[in-house]
Length: 202
Image 1: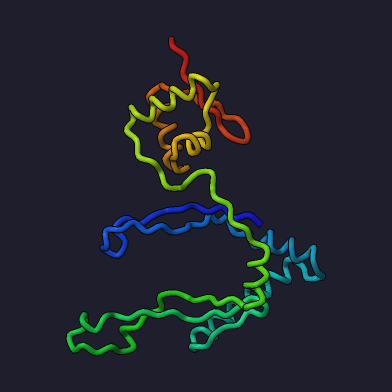
Image 2 (image 1 turned 180 degrees about the vertical axis):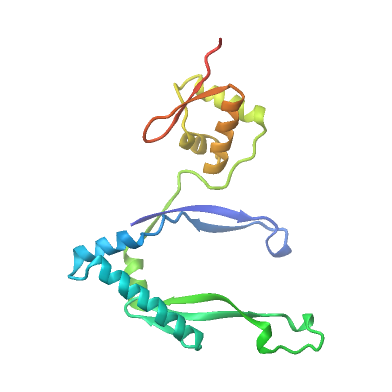
């Protein structure tokens, strides 16, 4: 299965003055409880209601086990365990750490080796055609690019803004809203996505 990725970078990594590249995955939304229930119903004799009841009870048991300091095992999936942090000794007047200074930071997950191998065999990574990081433009500079694009194309879409000008989805939407407010563009609400046209001269 294809998973989109982007290459981002951290400036002045660890104070060395060097730029360090890292990979960021474009994760899709998680399956909902109802969607999971339908999948299970189609695969075996367990109903969606049965699954919800089991998952509710599993969550209850997980809370109990983790609260007692135990790891919690999900068969065929992996292990949950606690990840804690603490107040630095330097922040204490006496320099000592007690139970009150320890807090639950997160819950760790360690997958079963079999599960990890199965995912590794099926996954494939493909570079995303646009980035969630947004290029920085001044209003005049970006409008010059948009108007040049529209001089040879009938319309532009939010996705085209992302691909053509290196904008994030959020920034593309905000720029389009601004150009509409300034009477530079008009919006046509069509499916599956809105189209934006140059506003005709009056």
